Image (cartoon, rainbow, N blue to C red; front, side):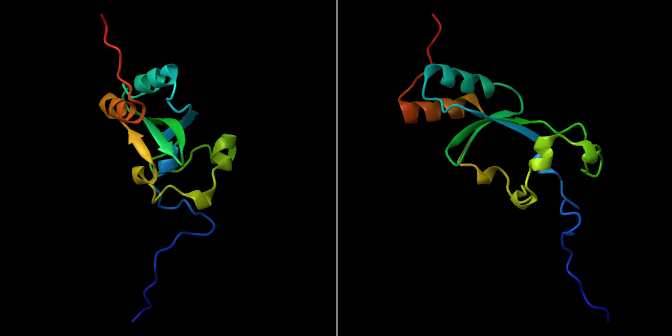
Amino acid sequence: MGKKTKKRKSKADPCLGCDAPCCRYIMIEIDEPEEPEDRDAARWYVTHKSVSVRVLDGTWYVHFSTPCLKLDGDNRCKVYEVRPKICRKHPVDACERSEREECYDMVFSSLEQLDKYLYEEYDWKPRKRK
Protein backbone atom coordinates (compact mmCIF):
# COMPACT_ATOMS: atom_id res chain seq x y z
CA MET A 1 0.00 0.00 0.00
CA GLY A 2 1.14 3.50 -0.78
CA LYS A 3 1.54 6.29 1.73
CA LYS A 4 -1.29 8.75 2.15
CA THR A 5 -0.16 12.30 1.64
CA LYS A 6 -1.87 15.42 2.87
CA LYS A 7 -2.80 18.04 0.31
CA ARG A 8 -1.04 21.25 1.27
CA LYS A 9 -0.30 24.66 -0.11
CA SER A 10 2.68 24.84 -2.37
CA LYS A 11 5.45 27.04 -1.02
CA ALA A 12 6.09 28.19 -4.56
CA ASP A 13 2.39 28.94 -5.15
CA PRO A 14 0.50 29.72 -1.93
CA CYS A 15 -2.59 30.76 -3.93
CA LEU A 16 -3.05 27.37 -5.60
CA GLY A 17 -6.65 26.22 -5.14
CA CYS A 18 -7.83 29.48 -3.60
CA ASP A 19 -11.13 31.09 -4.64
CA ALA A 20 -9.43 34.52 -4.47
CA PRO A 21 -11.54 36.33 -1.85
CA CYS A 22 -8.91 39.10 -1.75
CA CYS A 23 -9.60 39.81 -5.44
CA ARG A 24 -13.36 40.08 -5.07
CA TYR A 25 -13.79 43.40 -3.30
CA ILE A 26 -12.51 46.92 -2.87
CA MET A 27 -12.43 48.41 0.62
CA ILE A 28 -11.73 52.08 1.32
CA GLU A 29 -11.28 53.65 4.75
CA ILE A 30 -13.95 56.15 5.80
CA ASP A 31 -14.55 58.32 8.84
CA GLU A 32 -16.50 56.87 11.72
CA PRO A 33 -20.02 58.29 11.37
CA GLU A 34 -19.88 60.58 14.41
CA GLU A 35 -20.68 63.71 12.38
CA PRO A 36 -23.91 64.22 10.39
CA GLU A 37 -22.05 64.31 7.05
CA ASP A 38 -20.32 61.01 7.80
CA ARG A 39 -23.61 59.39 8.85
CA ASP A 40 -25.25 60.55 5.65
CA ALA A 41 -22.38 59.20 3.54
CA ALA A 42 -22.41 55.81 5.31
CA ARG A 43 -26.19 55.61 4.92
CA TRP A 44 -25.87 56.39 1.21
CA TYR A 45 -23.22 53.68 0.71
CA VAL A 46 -25.41 50.90 2.11
CA THR A 47 -28.33 51.80 -0.15
CA HIS A 48 -26.33 50.50 -3.12
CA LYS A 49 -26.18 46.93 -4.41
CA SER A 50 -23.14 44.93 -3.25
CA VAL A 51 -21.91 47.73 -0.96
CA SER A 52 -21.58 47.50 2.81
CA VAL A 53 -19.95 49.44 5.61
CA ARG A 54 -17.59 47.43 7.79
CA VAL A 55 -15.56 47.99 10.91
CA LEU A 56 -12.27 46.17 11.44
CA ASP A 57 -10.17 46.80 14.53
CA GLY A 58 -12.06 50.05 15.13
CA THR A 59 -11.45 51.42 11.61
CA TRP A 60 -14.46 52.05 9.37
CA TYR A 61 -14.53 51.08 5.68
CA VAL A 62 -16.87 51.13 2.72
CA HIS A 63 -16.73 47.68 1.11
CA PHE A 64 -17.61 47.13 -2.55
CA SER A 65 -18.21 43.47 -3.45
CA THR A 66 -16.93 43.37 -7.00
CA PRO A 67 -14.51 40.86 -8.50
CA CYS A 68 -11.36 41.90 -10.30
CA LEU A 69 -11.84 41.71 -14.06
CA LYS A 70 -8.38 40.15 -14.39
CA LEU A 71 -9.26 36.86 -12.66
CA ASP A 72 -9.40 33.87 -14.96
CA GLY A 73 -11.73 30.87 -14.63
CA ASP A 74 -9.36 29.26 -12.10
CA ASN A 75 -9.27 32.40 -9.92
CA ARG A 76 -5.77 33.18 -11.11
CA CYS A 77 -4.52 36.64 -12.02
CA LYS A 78 -4.23 37.11 -15.78
CA VAL A 79 -1.87 40.09 -15.33
CA TYR A 80 0.18 38.72 -12.42
CA GLU A 81 3.54 39.92 -13.74
CA VAL A 82 2.26 43.50 -14.16
CA ARG A 83 -0.43 43.56 -11.44
CA PRO A 84 -0.98 46.81 -9.52
CA LYS A 85 1.34 47.62 -6.65
CA ILE A 86 -1.47 47.27 -4.09
CA CYS A 87 -1.85 43.64 -5.21
CA ARG A 88 1.90 43.01 -4.94
CA LYS A 89 1.93 44.47 -1.43
CA HIS A 90 -0.92 42.23 -0.22
CA PRO A 91 0.76 39.88 2.26
CA VAL A 92 0.29 36.18 1.57
CA ASP A 93 0.49 35.48 5.31
CA ALA A 94 -2.63 37.65 5.77
CA CYS A 95 -4.60 35.36 3.50
CA GLU A 96 -8.34 35.87 3.52
CA ARG A 97 -9.04 32.34 2.33
CA SER A 98 -10.30 31.34 5.75
CA GLU A 99 -11.45 34.77 6.91
CA ARG A 100 -14.88 35.90 5.83
CA GLU A 101 -17.40 38.37 7.26
CA GLU A 102 -16.92 36.98 10.75
CA CYS A 103 -13.48 38.60 10.95
CA TYR A 104 -15.05 42.10 11.06
CA ASP A 105 -16.17 43.83 14.24
CA MET A 106 -19.37 44.98 12.50
CA VAL A 107 -20.92 44.65 9.05
CA PHE A 108 -23.78 46.88 7.89
CA SER A 109 -25.37 45.66 4.67
CA SER A 110 -28.60 47.64 4.84
CA LEU A 111 -29.89 51.05 5.76
CA GLU A 112 -32.00 49.51 8.53
CA GLN A 113 -28.98 47.86 10.17
CA LEU A 114 -26.92 51.03 10.05
CA ASP A 115 -29.76 53.27 11.26
CA LYS A 116 -30.35 50.93 14.21
CA TYR A 117 -26.66 51.14 15.15
CA LEU A 118 -26.58 54.93 14.76
CA TYR A 119 -29.67 55.27 16.93
CA GLU A 120 -28.27 52.98 19.65
CA GLU A 121 -24.72 54.38 19.56
CA TYR A 122 -25.36 58.09 18.97
CA ASP A 123 -29.06 58.49 19.84
CA TRP A 124 -29.52 59.61 16.24
CA LYS A 125 -32.63 59.45 14.08
CA PRO A 126 -32.80 60.17 10.36
CA ARG A 127 -34.59 63.38 9.47
CA LYS A 128 -37.97 62.97 7.85
CA ARG A 129 -38.79 64.96 4.74
CA LYS A 130 -41.45 67.60 5.13
